[in-house]
Image (cartoon, rainbow, N blue to C red):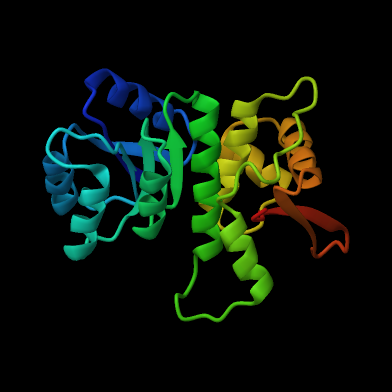
Length: 228
């Protein structure tokens, strides 16, 4: 589960963003802050994986808060979620290590896609930190956050985005290849429904298909998340 802190000075907007996050499988909101000071105190009490950070806060800017977090050695990823759209702010956010920049106002789908890309990146980075990687894998890691670069194909008729997200979340939690039967057990879907979604997601290159040979000699299809 990916823990998220929502930081926004507008109480209503913060609640809306928290509700959006709660709808995305694999994510949970562990706190809401309405100022930089509240956010820093919350992170000192309980670290999180990701901060959804507004730039316009009452006590200091979101970018100033990122600097303070880095200076304090608080390790968390940051996604800027703000109405600020001037190039200098965007550039400075990049310089301070913000992984994403989402301009208000946005839809649930816009945030969901950013969060899904972030989850894909975390999956790609999982494992021993000292392990070596290839240039192709490095390229996939950097490409994982460019959600607009290679949009997924539309879901076929009779398929729903929430169910597809449910299947992807099950594979993300597992961290290893799963069969259709295993995905069905993890999601509560029927095996045939899980199979339909797995096949589509594999065609869409969200998943990688492999074969596992059991004692009977018949291969079983297994699916693993891939980073696009």
